[in-house]
Amino acid sequence: MKNFAYARAQDADTAVQLITQNQNAKFLSGGTNLVDLMRENIEQPDHLIDVTGLPLAQVEELPGGGVSIGALVRNSHLAANQIIRERYPVLSQAILMGASAQIRNMATTGGNLMQRTRCYYFYDTDARCNKREPGTGCDALEGFNRIHAILGASDDCIATHPSDMCVALAALDATVHVTGTGVERTIPIVEFHRLPEDTPQIDTNLQPDELITSVELPALPFARNSMYRKVRDRASYAFALVSVAAALEVEDGTIKNVRLALGGVAHKPWRATEAEKVLTGAKADEEIFKRAAAEELKAARGYKHNSFKIELAERTIVSVLKTLASEGGAR
Amino acid sequence: MSETNSGGREFADRTVPVILQINGIKHELQLEPRVSLLDALREYVGLTGTKKGCNQGACGACTVLVDNERINSCFALAVQYQDREITTIEGVAHSDQLHALQAAFIECDGFQCGYCTPGQICSAIAMFEEFKQGAPSAVTEHLAETEIEFSEAEIKERMSGNLCRCGAYVGIVEAIREAFDKEAAR
Ligand SMILES: Cc1cc2nc3c(=O)[nH]c(=O)nc-3n(C[C@H](O)[C@H](O)[C@H](O)COP(=O)(O)OP(=O)(O)OC[C@H]3O[C@@H](n4cnc5c(N)ncnc54)[C@H](O)[C@@H]3O)c2cc1C
Ligand code: FES
Ligand code: FES
Image (tube, rainbow over all chains, first blue to last red; front, side):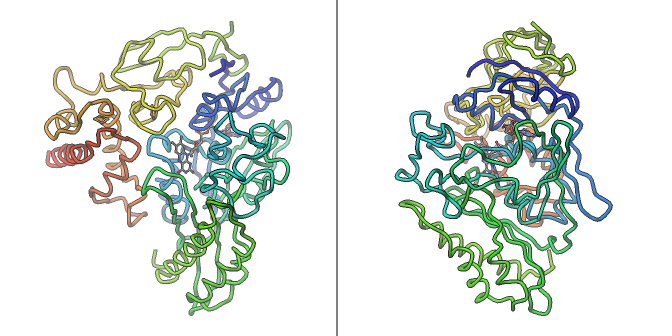
């Protein structure tokens, strides 16, 4: 690992100031992604600004029934939080299905949002990768692309966003609160991460001088009936091939409210708006679940090794919706 | 060179003073910021009980306790862990009395080569704490409830961050079960 200069910020303003004033600087939180990438020489910052001392480690109930999650709340603490377990079980489950207990103890909300792809070619500095080195090409297109995207990819990049937590946040309509030089703003989660297009080196719409301060969950009473299902090669400690986050409200056999998002399929957590359109107001049965899943995956495109993901995603959507419909508000 | 802990106003590079509190003893070191907690323990403090397996978060051999929580020391920059209480495998026994988990690992053959064992034991110690506090896992059926059954599925899921290349898993799970039952019976 290349050496770097280190500083520890005690408040958000100082952190932003330090990142603005120094060349090639990055924030450091749990380090579980950044330290790894630095060791592989994929990230080579000259300055690291440790933000783990910032007073942003609280989960707080908001007046309107929502919840604010500080950027420095660690993944394990968020998943174990009683409010989250009761009101937003999909979020607890998504986090608990990611990584290991040790990593979840280090990983933070902000770092999880900003984690980079696990594409093998991105990690292999001998391979061509437009995300790592813009303009060099993409070896995944014709390579071993089993874990790659089936939705929203481009000819320049077919990498996926690996986070589980972010898929749950997408289903829950979360907003990301950020602060930059003199400006604070909020970014809806679905607009936080971006599709690769011809600039896959840019993962998110966060500006280089902006710090994530918190994530807000809106009040969403029916999210008590929500869940996360992750399909992967091992039962534990593996990234998703496909995952589904969903919340469902059925009244008198009719779907009153639904939120659906997919993981492991795109460059960003994929909010399944096409499926939601089919489902909302329809009779809650397997036929409509299948139709909705097919509608969402209509735009999907498989590559040599990952076409299986299309059917897998459809089936996982159907199975999750069936479970939520049968359990109703019982959870 | 500037200080590391100067309220975030200055940057430190090259080597910086790093004070670590390890197994109750204060160690004053001079380290480059890029030195991991794992390397600080092994190479600078001489505590080689903590092992380096993958150096990338995949194996858990480097697991240590920080303020009683388990982390992978390979991802931790030592400079980030000042003013924290660090416990390694060398610090889990009480004078010459083994920790209940150490004893159970011996009794149940919870290892073959022993390389993963320090990480397994540190991990299991913290896992007990998490369990006692009612923290759920990915296999916990009723997520909102804090009374969770200490089932084999729970043990396996909660310990999945610790790999054993010798495949001593049967003994490892047995040792954890036994230590847990003993503690529960007390
Ligand atoms: C072996 C292994 C298995 C894993 N498995 C899974 C899995 O199954 N599912 C899953 O979802 N994840 C998984 N992960 C990834 C893990 O969730 C991420 O590494 C973690 O969430 C990153 O958080 P961190 O706090 O450690 O971030 P860091 O590594 O500290 O930082 C990551 C990035 O975020 C930026 N950053 C951090 N905080 C802020 C902030 N407040 N504002 C702006 N930018 C910020 C940093 O500059 C850096 O670019 C795995 C990781 C490993 C190593
Ligand atoms: S050495 Fe840290 S997890 Fe393998
Ligand atoms: S005992 Fe050899 S690696 Fe676990």
